[in-house]
Length: 175
Image 1 (cartoon, rainbow, N blue to C red):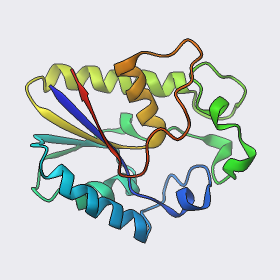
Image 2 (cartoon, rainbow, N blue to C red; image 1 turned 45 degrees about the vertical axis):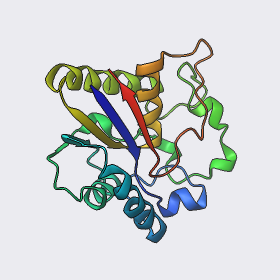
Image 3 (cartoon, one colour; image 1 turned 90 degrees about the vertical axis):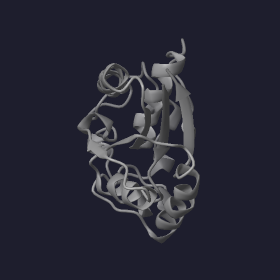
Image 4 (cartoon, one colour; image 1 turned 90 degrees about the horizontal axis):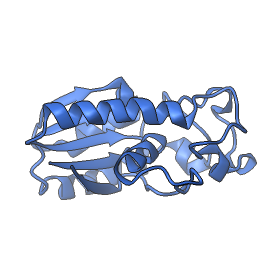
């Protein structure tokens, strides 16, 4: 079974280095990124798309889904709830600590352990229900860290890097 993952296209918050923007849609560059990604996705023989229900992921999904592949929206793929850090400047936050699996420094937001738990539950279900399918997940940067951990294990130090997945970058995993 193959699982491809793609992060949504760029938003103004991404461009301005701002945390969150959960209700935000793609900007002009994000639309172009998704259009470019659609060319690659057309060659992947995707059977099913599972998408976060956020506006920016839905918009990305609509652009990349040129072949009208069936889509399921799953809340478990939503971005990390950044709580009180919504709309804060990333320059004032230690990203390595912010995205660390074990970190408790930043409070007032969803933990990465919680993100991992819901993403792992989603992937376990995908593995069970769609074992003979090729799946595309359309999601977010924080969620993609949890997907990475699911396939590669959680490092002893809990770090995976803060810039590990560019907007509209596609990665492949095998189950």
